[in-house]
Image (cartoon, rainbow, N blue to C red):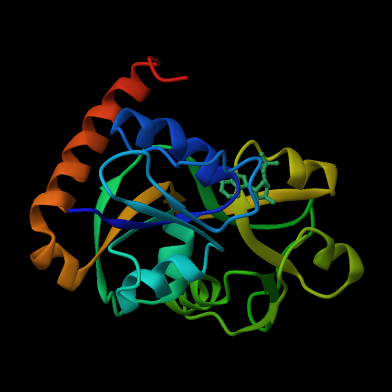
Length: 216
Ligand code: AMP
């Protein structure tokens, strides 16, 4: 039975395609050349939806996609009431969710102004430390917020730390480790059990091969 698979566009999409190809799931058109957002798979009767990150959990929760592949950051930001299953760590897109601020500047103890795209993650983090914060929601280029005096610090994804450094910021606390995950719609887990299990099993094998450096 074919699955509807929602994939986070951008970096995750590019990194996932070789893993899905190893599971014999390949889009019929070249996604790099096509402006289509839904692709049929060459075999297996699957459909691949290319979605914005925040929409992947929404599609899976509402059952328009049976499974989704997106970052742990997106899943955490979506909320705590998990209305889908998180079933697999694809061990790609590894990075950290961190707090960061201007080099050498001490953060105020209370009343910290935090800029982030990840407002739920940021709020929860500071709440767990019983710190009062005001959160400024931005949709990108968070590093600029402290430079403009809009915030004292930011909560953002850090990989190499080069972006922080280039903007005079330093990493402070690690909130959590992030990587790409497979999520599954609750009903599909029952109604399409065999197909979902097969995908999980094949992905696990592909991930192991990938870790061994055998997938391009
Ligand atoms: P870096 O300069 O390597 O620390 O990368 C930081 C920038 O790249 C941030 O603006 C992040 O939003 C983005 N980034 C790095 N790694 C990832 C990832 N695995 N997933 C999504 N965004 C990422």
